Amino acid sequence: MSVGVAVLVVALVVSAVFAVYRKRTDGKLSVVGSPTEATAASDHVSWSHTRKPESLTPSDIGTDLGEQATLLQFSSAFCQPCRATRQVLEQVADMVPGVSHVEIDAESHLDLVRALDIRRTPTVLVLRSDGSIARRAAGVPRKADVIAAIGELV
Amino acid sequence: MSQEVTSTSAKTGAAPRGIDPRGQRVGAAITTVVLAVVLVTGFWPLLAWQALVFLLGAALGPTRTPYSWIFKTFVRPRLGKPTELEDPEPPRFAQGVGLAFAAVGLVGYLTGVTWLGALATGFALVAALLNASIGLCLGCEMYLLGRRLVAR
Image (cartoon, rainbow over all chains, first blue to last red):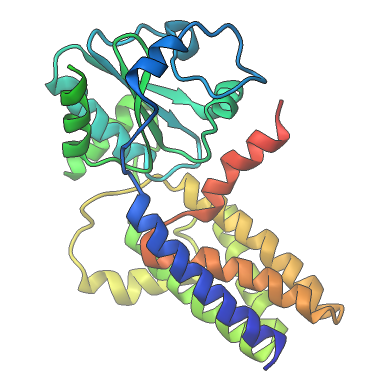
């Protein structure tokens, strides 16, 4: 078997495995930490070289937090699914009182991106009213899932 | 639906008109086949052709490549209107990433370092196949990781 054929076989297998993994995990809103831990850890000072922050403040995201919850979206210039994510989150924010949608340019917040270990855009964080991180998704979340996640907090 | 897309993009100042995402998927599928043939045959002129297609996509935009022409001429007439449009910048960036891998692959094949040629072609094939199959833009996802590594 030539090198080229070997590479082709490996490339096909890698693509298939990754496609299945991505389809399973994309947009899934997974729970982050537990509420008690998150509240205890909310008194951060600087996190550039410490552990992952479990809570965000208005100064971190550059605007006020939503009264009930904040849908924080990290976007970037070269991001196809960011537009669809924006639509989903804006619709939910318009529909549920006290919920706001905040979109952040990942590139101009690289410290925060590194601290939160955000690897791709869109990444969505669902924040409680105190700024603690309740859920997190990479990829476009389903509208029903976002509503359900907020329902648990409000 | 498409009206909604337009209003959103107008609000955020993104591209005023989007491109048909299905054209990108078809182009990625053709790219996958071309790269697979390159891997099996080691025929470097075909990789040079693919590099040229990537160059056109990166320089002129993803809708101005030969593969996009094939989509517009033979595929789109058989399909309905797209339910959504997308920003041309991400796929354009991805074409540039594809060009980089195709260029490294060409250097490999032309200098007799066949494994390098095959490896670079294989990376480009994974990206093209993921784009064709699930609409994933691998180059775009690498972009943020790259910025995280490089920029302070």
